[in-house]
Length: 239
Image (cartoon, rainbow, N blue to C red; front, top):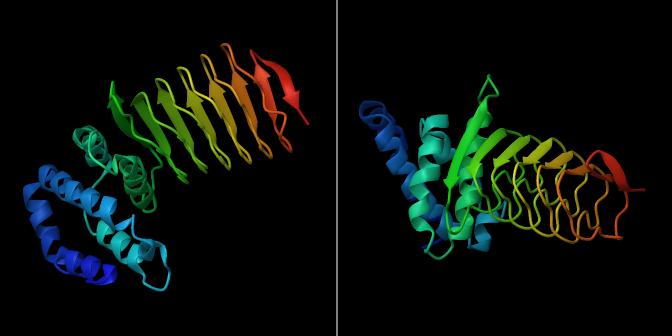
C-alpha cells in the first residue's frame, strides 16, 4: 500500500473522533498522540513522506491538527514517550514532540511556554526544538542537536549533548548545565548561554550569533565566518 493511502486511511475518521476526544478528555487525547508517534516513527523513515508531490507530510499534519490537544497533553506525552527509550527509531521521538509544539503554536494567541520533562532519562530526547519558533523549557537533560535551526527560546534545565544550537537561526538557547562538543556549529544567529562547561570544537563553521560560556571550555574552532564567543563576559573569539 502506498504511504499516502496509509495516511489517508488513518485520518479518514478523525472528524468523528473529535466528539469522542471531547467526551473522554485528556487521557483519550494522549492515547491518540501515542498512536500518532508510532505512525510518525514509521512513515518519516520513508523518503516519500518528504516528497511534496505525494503530500504525505501535509496529510499527516492536517490529521494532527484535528486532535484537540494543548500544552498539558504535550507535557504528558513527554513523560509517556519515555517508555520507548529502548525501541528502534527512538531518535525520532524528540522531533515528533517538537512538531506537536509547532502545530499547536501556529494557532496560539498567547505565546506561552511549553514544558518537556526528561528527568533522568538514560537516552534523552534528541533534536528538541528543531526549527521551532516556540518558547520551550526542558526539565532535565536533553540529547544532541537541541535547538537545531530554532528561532524561539529554549531553556535546558540540565545538560545538553553534542552540537547544541546546531544551525541556530535566531532566538535564545540557555543550557543551565554542561554541553558536549560542537556547541553552536554552523549557527547563523541568535544567542547561546552555557551556565557550566562546554566541550571541544566550539562554533565551527558559524556565520553569526553569540556563544556565552560561564564554566570551562575545550578548544575553539578556527573555521568560522562570523559571530562571537564569550567566556565569563569577555570576548575570546570574533571576526
